[in-house]
Amino acid sequence: MQATTLTQLTNSLKTEQHFAGEDKYWKEYFPNLVKISNDFSEGAREFFKKQKFYVCNPSILVGVLGACENFDTVYKIKKVEQGYQFLSQTAQLQLERALSFDIKKIACFTKSFRNEVNISDGRHLREFTLIELELAKLELSELLDSIELCIKSMISNGIFKNEDVINKQFGVSIKKQEKRFLTSKYQRITYTEAIKLLQQKGENLQWGDDLSSSSEGKLLELMGYKPFFITHFPEHIKFFNMRLNRANPKVVNSADLILPVSGEAVGSAEREFNFSILKERFFKSSMFEKMKKIGITEQDLGCYFKIVEKREIPEHAGCGIGFERVLQSVLSPYPTDIRLFSQPYIMNRTLGIFV
Image (cartoon, rainbow, N blue to C red; front, side, top):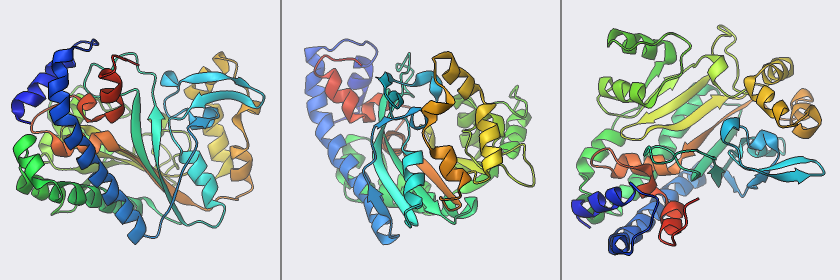
């Protein structure tokens, strides 16, 4: 697979129509992608084994709180006796519940489904692999240490077992990626610092604005195109159970890991354990307003809030790692389309199916 293969496949993605002529390029590309993906996954599993994680198999059929990472893009399946049934966007609450069973560290490899209107922007997928972790008695700084170790284990196992393929067929320098991803500690800046840096570069941003992919790209340039964390986002733009910072309740103890090419690849946070704060943030959120518009009531939420109220779950923190975005970042010699790193998309496409 030469650079022409990547170019040909990228060109084929410009239309949602399968052409027989593209299959010769997929035949060359797809086996390499599967092999490298397996080795990246194995790197994560090695990290979990060394760190003594339990690795579980969560459900992808969930109630509304398992589907509301981004409620605008939920896949609603049907109405059932206990409420509405959705395709999962996150296994976070399932993993949190597992911590109440005397498990200190738990992880999973799962699927996240997003009913995106458009996936031709090169950044979004309707189905992707999510590696999720929840750890008891952990603060944000320690969580970021764990995320960095996991990412480095994935990348190290993936690139050194596939040096020839990555060098010759993806056109990516192993030495360059080793230096970029593995040899130094990932920098950490706060959201407030990020906004100031962008304003100094002429970006029309105010504190409280969400960061666009363009803004992430400019920050990557300022950070030398190396991975870095952005921490302590405004509470109103983040998930309802991210823990409010007690010294500054306008922000949550959260962090995103920004990677070259792919941008945000990991979302993470301490989880809110104060029941009053948690309940107030959820029921005042725009997310709950959207739920009510389709007929969801408090009775459809399950027992998550009751479990938190009873303090059955220890204080904890966790994250979700977008697997395809990690692959995209490491394997891209230049800006690429995320669909090139999605096995489900490729297999459906080559069957003439576009979902």
